Length: 127
Image 1 (cartoon, rainbow, N blue to C red):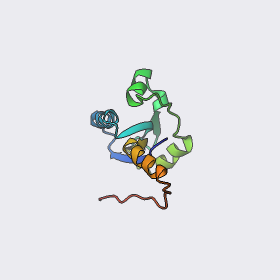
Image 2: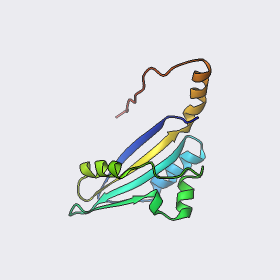
Image 3: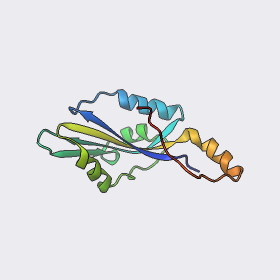
Image 4: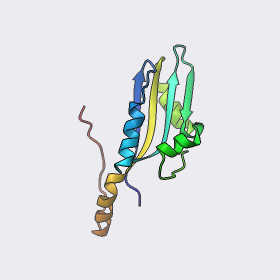
């Protein structure tokens, strides 16, 4: 049984990264809140040339750190990358994540055992 699976796209102006995002992803996984199922970084330089880094492009040890459950990357398609790149400004980057919401699995199980049926779903962003 899986929890809800979400995609998240986060943009960054100036193509500047530090390690804080990866540390927080790792912490969220270790705490059992989420599981990262796949990830990609899409970057454009000042001239609009695109570079993409997907999990499958990374070192095996890095993949294992991001996917400790042994999930195989590959959920993000070329079409997904192109869709993000189309809305990305020059000299900007975006991180594309597919995550499973592990915290929701016990709730899903309880709903199913009570013969409950999902009738609607959505997300309200506080911003």
